[in-house]
Image 1: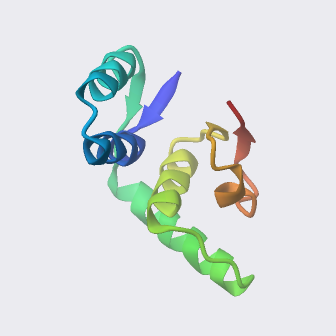
Image 2 (image 1 turned 60 degrees about the vertical axis):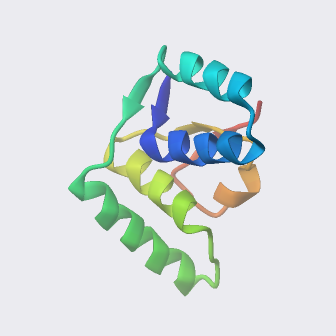
Length: 99
């Protein structure tokens, strides 16, 4: 199973905001068992291209979600496990998996 470094940031930020050390520790324990997809130069261009494509359709998604989608595209990954399926419903190459 893979996780993006952007996802680690998003979830970690939430746990820090909750001030829940035990949840944060559990999250980092879990993440340490996963392969991490790291940001690269190519992903940012994919994210920018996707941003333009979606805007042309009148669709706007959050920057972090654009970055995650760009990382997936740049790495040839199409499956995404997320609780935010609606954030990615307009990204045609991503198949969302709910949990």
